[in-house]
Image (cartoon, rainbow, N blue to C red; front, side, top):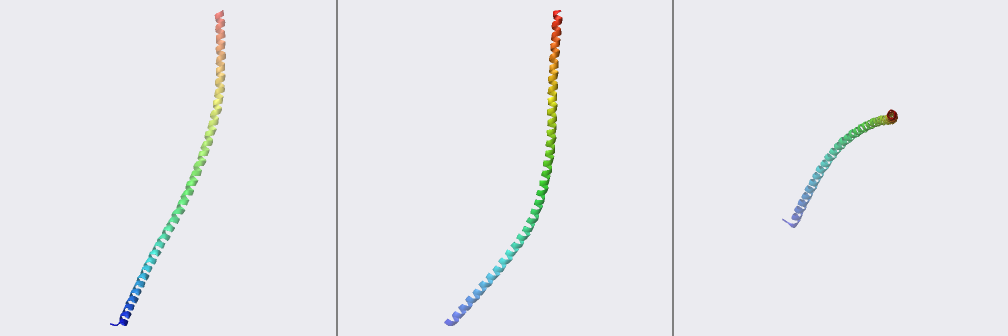
Length: 124
């Protein structure tokens, strides 16, 4: 085999190997592209699910906020009632204190009258 034939054979083998490597790279590139596209499709699906869940969560939060507002309104109503009852108790306490003081004053007067009567009876 001559030098020329060897060089041609080597060139052909190198060319074939280069073509095989390029074909393998193209195949690997195609597989990688398919995988990336598959992942992108999964991401799109997950994104759609997350968007739906996010909308549901927003709706639930709005419902919860509405319930809290309702509860707050009820507490304010109850608080107003307690303040009204407290004012009534204070009013009743003031009346009771006034009546009690009057009663005590009356008892003191009665005791003084009884003591005066007893002194007059003892003196006679």
